[in-house]
Amino acid sequence: MKKMPVFKIEPAIQGISKNLIKISEKSTEISGKATSFLTEVADFSLFVWLTIRETFSRDFEFKEFFRQCFQIGYKSLALISVTGIIMGLVLTIQSRPTLVDFGAVSMLPGMIAVSLIREMGPVITALICAGKIGSGMGAELGAMRVTEQIEAMEVSATNPMRFLVVTRVIAATLMIPILVIYADGLGMLGSWAGANIKGEVSFTLFFSQAFSSLGFSDFIPAVIKTFFFGAVIGFVGCYKGYTAGRGTESVGLAANSAVVLGSLLVIIVDLIAVQITDML
Image (cartoon, rainbow, N blue to C red; front, side):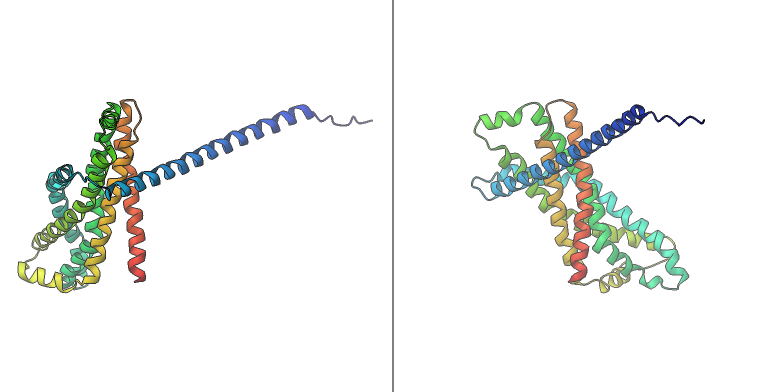
């Protein structure tokens, strides 16, 4: 007679239990990350609300506000100048050969103007500002948190939210649109220079063709969304620095996360703005 096969139940049960343990650990890890994300969103929302509330309170710090406008606006002019000129120059050099193939070189100034004013100028300038201004805010406030300067301000009856955060957020909200308009102007100058590398276009003719292709529907939405870019960069930079940890390494982490999150939110805000503009 043939012997019946013997099934070993115990090893099978052990294998199933190990798989269940792995699934449980994975689900716990995912749940922990989701909880951490939602907590971060709630903390950031509360931080934004407190900042808005302190903005409309008495005793606004005008001296610190103007100092931050100088730091954010004037100290960024050199970087924004180089970025704006290169942006217009590269866009023109890359676009001109294609337009030459179709015999549409005369459309180059209008195409560059619309591209710079509506999209490339605001987004690229905001990303540059997120790297420079956002990281600066995160590192500065993070260092103040590590060295307990913020706690010292609270003890001395100085409101750190009003003095440190509100002034920086409002300064970023107002200065970044100005920097964007400045970068757009230099971008058009760079585009004119690029058009004259392999051709010859007068300054008056180039800008006449460029501005004839623009309208208020191109300029106004592009300027409005830059205020939101500035607010996002200011809020994120201040939040990451203000809520930094106690260790010295937290200063670097605050600066790095301010740049990453600020750049991501700028792109998201731009996507939302484009959809709203398209519906209007």
